[in-house]
Image (cartoon, rainbow, N blue to C red; front, side, top):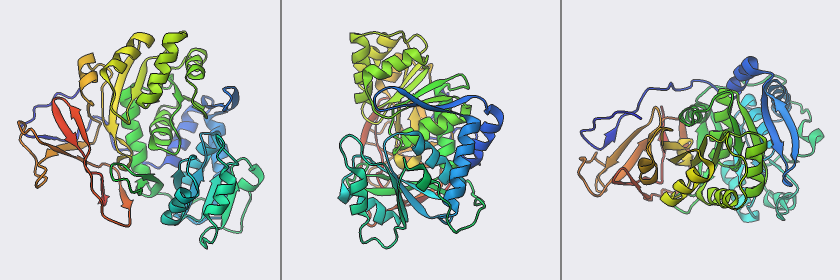
Amino acid sequence: MYELQLIESHVPAQADMDIREITVGRLLREVADARGGAEAVLEVRQDGTFGRSWTYSELLDDAESLALALSSRFAPGERVVVWSPNSPEWVLMEYACALAGLVLVTANPAFQEKELRYVVEQSGAVAVFLVESFRGNPMLEIGHAAVEGNANIREVVDLNDAETLRQTGTGGSALADVQPCDAAQIQYTSGTTGFPKGAVLSHRGLVSNASYYAGRCGVTEDTVWINIMPMFHTSGCGMVTLGGLQAGCKMVLVSLFDPTVINRLIESQKATVILGVPTVVVGLVEAQEADPVDASTLELVSCGGATVAPDLVRRVTRAYDCKFSTLYGQTEYCPVITQHHNHDSIEDICNTIGQPVAQTAVSIGSVEDNSVAPLDTSERFALPVPAPCWNTMTTRTQQARRSMRTAGCTLATSGEWTRAAM
């Protein structure tokens, strides 16, 4: 925990971890060079059975070959939508787009035609990569309908059609020179405003934030991290996927959440870390209480995305005999802003959202003029100072406030950003 002596409602950025001046693709290459033979990804299919697996060398090889295919069909900086549930192909597209200098636009697989059309058109995407269906949603059919009449769209590709996915176009055969501050992803988030905004997230921001998050979780190369978070969100493709990449650890990628299956995975894979939103964690702990598995290897349950009830914290630590950490974030921030340290007391975990992660300044300001408030002010407004390079794609100005209790103070954060640079 940071030992802070505050004289006003402002926490300066702490430099206990460095800003990562590196691209996602370069990071993958570094880890593959250092940990090539280590298991990187294990697929868990929608029926709960195990599928394919990759070492870090194999993951890099497949990502680079896909990146070369994409580079022959799309120019650096062009935007492509990935509309799919969790799958190894999603992971490969994340790395391939990063290597090729393409901007990956994420989309929720539950979208219907109107929602998907908005994301495709508003992002300026030139292609949609999807699957045939998921949980009864006819995605291939919807995808074609959503791009009808869109002159920008050049391809609609089924991710499970390997031949079409990896076909070679007429463009160049070399990968782009991607820079850390280049856009890596666009993630659409309604936040508190109810109007979808496309947050443009940089390589630097995603990699650095994942590093801070994973570091505070205590992730090492021996960690086994079960990824139940959706890849279309920064939690799945950023915090867990890129967080695990930092350490070169194993990620068990789950396509469809089933609490009984996940608990059995914790036991069989000797999992050490798992991240979930409160409703998901409730499902896990209820299943563990009803039908316990050997979860003795589990070291940490990380939780955020909504209010975490103190009772849930205590139930998890009791049922799994592990540590619990809550966090608060915003997609625009890549996304973690505050997070507990692993040695924080149960009282702090139950009643606060932790301290800011590394390289993150947070101030509490006046609702009237946003000036930094004195420590004894009762009404407060929080302004996180973003570390990554990003900007918000929006067609209108919107602002909102969100309240959250932390360390005896009320936090409310701005729901609208225009641009920030680290």
